[in-house]
Amino acid sequence: MSLRDRAKKRFTASVADLDKARLQDRYEGLDVTNICDVTLREPARFAGEVQSLRVVPRSGSPSLEITVSDGSGARAVAVFLGRRSLPGLEPGRGVVLEGVPRKERNRTVMLNPAYTLLPH
Image (cartoon, rainbow, N blue to C red; front, side):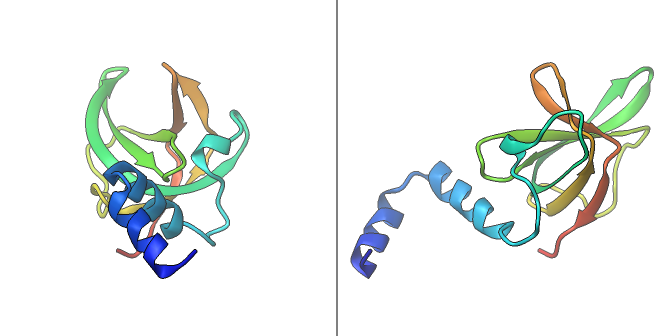
């Protein structure tokens, strides 16, 4: 593909397509699984960018829910029980999550996963 074709593709692509490509490039080479390819109820390790944070009640105590996307078209939610915040986790921050995913209300969810913050 010539330089002109690549430039044309870049300038005519939608913002969503450019964002997906940026996220896929960002986590390449980290030895992680794409969120869309994760096997439920088996240990998994995936990386993504924090899209949103929210505090929700779960069983009477606060829980921090973090939505993560890796550009594969799927999203996952990491739930940290009993937490209102985690230092360093903010929208746009890259993170690697390790845990056992499961389905909950049509969402891929990990409860209290181990996490590693990636450099900005």
